Image (cartoon, rainbow, N blue to C red; front, side, top):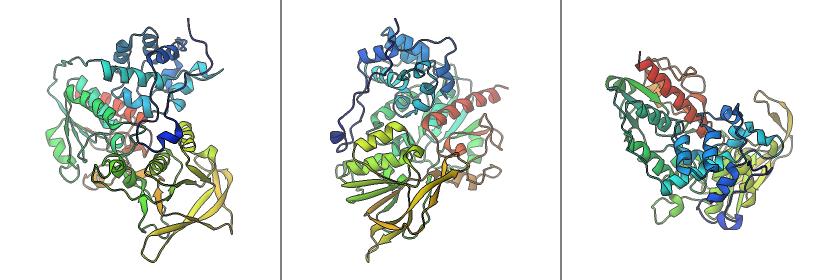
Amino acid sequence: MPNMSLTKNPMPSQAPDVRNKNFLEVATGYTEDMAVDEAQRCLNCKNRPCMTGCPVAVKIPEFLALVAERKFEEAYAKITETNALPAVCGRVCPQERQCESKCVRGIKGEPVGIGRVERFVADYHLKNGKDKPVNVEKNGKKVAVVGSGPSGLTAAGDLVKLGYEVTIFEAFHTAGGVLMYGIPEFRLPKDIVKKEIDKLRQAGVKIETNTIIGKTLMVDELLEQFDAIYIGTGAGLPSFLRIEGEALNGVYSANEFLTRINLMKGYKFPEYDTPVYCGKNVAVFGGGNVAMDAARCAKRLGAENVYIVYRRGKEELPARKEEVEHAEEEGIQFKLLENPTKFIGDENGWLKGVELLSMELGEPDASGRRKPVEIKGSEHVLDIDTAVIAIGQTPNPLIKKTTAGLDTNAKGCIVADENGATSLAYVYAGGDVVTGAATVILAMGAGKTAAAAIHEKLSE
């Protein structure tokens, strides 16, 4: 019998006043009984609307049905037919805007907690299961994947299953891309990411780290060695406010702040030799998930007051609702309808404050959100000693500058068609390097689409 409860099983979590002082994972995960109970809320609809919201086409009703029968390993096998990173997706995928937004149970209550059950299944397998050796007949063709973030990892995982010899080239010393340097430990433990990547290595994917395409090797050189290339280098070049005082000591891009904390384990200083300056009064500029991550990290590093400064209202915040709620619970203060006009420094070049201008919402702009309008004469100063700018990222221009004939648009993103094909033959691209900064799961979907297109092309 289906479980007809109108609400999801709540996710067990650390208490806010405890978790905002440590970097341990906030959500502790479902128990077996909770996962089974939640899976039994699925009505197993014939037309499977939930699947239409999944960029990697996970067979959601099928894996939920298996969980409902306590067949956890079989559920894991079903998920991984199309999703190479289930433990990651179960944690950071915005299910509320994708699969769960299509769930029929959401019409008269809360949708099934698809992401929470997926996380349980993946964690159960990582703890109890054993990956069976995959013996795939090699087809004699080689594909290079540039970038080891979610898009590149997905493309590599799909291609190796199809018999290709796949090599990933990663600029950093550690594979994982944004999963390693961008998302904090308390949302996505790095050991989870490493285990997911190890599974791809076991399947035959080779990973070359400390290799910068466009400097260490050129795309043209890769084309001489490989039958096709997939570029999934993401959007790692930070955007700035371009206001006075942005070069003061104490002003970070979110990219640098989070990379030092996450990839370089700055939160474990002095155990790891990566000090991260974080003052007592911190302002994070932006309203997306990256801004929430930076603010919550600052709180955990000991900041007394942490502010999210955003020029629109709460309803317009682009961050996931869950991330906003967690930030509020942890004591992050929201200064909404405020816009920075200049940073203020002391005589030694250190940040001591920011001038803000109050805003009000006008008519909707091209994005569909109401446009913020300045309130003249509303300037005021907020005392801060650390600022983190989290207003977006764009692709690094290195590959474009070193690759003749590769088309990009005005924002520096590589131009690719719906299958990932670029202006260069046998060169494909996808994820944030094509779309600009987006979500992990959309990047994974692009990697999956391009892998299929590469296979079709190389099978001609």
